Amino acid sequence: MTISSTASRAPPTMSEHHSASFAGENDNVPLTGERIVPLVVLIAVPTLDAGAADVGAVDLARILVDAGHHPIVVSRGGRLESQVAAFGGETIRLDMASRNPVVMARNVGALMRLIRERGCNVVHAHGRAPAWSAYVAARVTRVPFLTSWYKGFREQNVFKRLYNSVMARGDRVIAVSDQIAELIVERHHTPWGRIAVVPSSIDFGSFDPAKVAPERIDAVRRAWGVKSDTKVILVTGRMIRRKGHHIVVRAVQRLKELGLKDFVCVFAGEDQHRTHYGGELWDLVIATDTTEVIRMGVPGDDRPAAYAAATMVVSAAIQAEGLQRAILESLAMGRPVVVSDLGAGPDVVQAPPVVAEERMTGLRVPAGDDAALAAALVKLLSMPETARRGIGTRGREWVLSHFDAATVARQTLAVYAEVARPRR
Image (tube, rainbow, N blue to C red; front, side):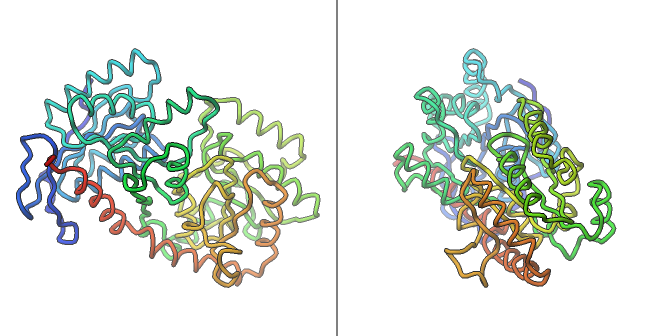
């Protein structure tokens, strides 16, 4: 176990609107009235690369540092480690992504030593593999254990259900959306009193259409090989089966059969080459004769400009996704969205029949239904630009009022204030 970076500055003072009394279950962390008692929080996450859990762990670390606490992020490592170090958090390398029982058992011992040596007050797991090691270590050391759910896990058999169950064993279980909270209760009978719904937040400074220069949009369209007057259907999410890219290909085939022209579908998600899905997807593109209107594996580093260059953004998830950050970013950039009913719930995308059409921020379709997806795409593509712009404006207003960083930070710290107290 090696420390890859440490905090290099004193933690900032917690702002007044976050004021609460924090204390751990360890005897060396007293409860001192209204004074803020800094916590040492061990955050266990598989990697620090690009997944929802990875980004969520980084966001949590930032919230804790800003509130005067000290997060220690334990993971296999990745490109987001530098972000944790930049705002004063600490990262430790440990193979938390492994599902090998021997490695997981070794991780338990390493985490127990870390908890005791560093006086950790809370253990917070993001992801199942690290959660099992963190859960055992937290229980043995009598430290509060939290988990964060970002999506619905598949439960093909009893063994998978058991493996997933660790995420419901937290003293508090944080769900990123109402949809995920309901799934946790349904599958694991977790009491509602142990569940806290805390959404992801968005950097509205970066994802602001007014701040994206036309040159950036032009650069993205050139990288996609798209003309300035061509409508773009942007598909978010890594190229893995549960994201439903194959459903989009079938829907695009229907658009072609209907005679629609002057549109391109861009798959901007990352293909991590961990499965054969990317190859299967390309075979499907060829088989459906959609090669000229589908772009795969295109550059996507400038995400705000990518959203600004799109006519609409699509998520065709076939597995419960909870709260996709890409959908929130799309809405923040004023783009209409089309999502499956497993890609986002009504708390994220306002869509008929839940709301009237003049209030909608996008459309929701049944998961796996390429015909319904095609119909939704046709509806948005055939609208006047002013109508699409109105939908996008309402979407931005919605996320600004529900997913801002300050609100999410307050909700997160409230959970910590509740669990990080001495037993009575």
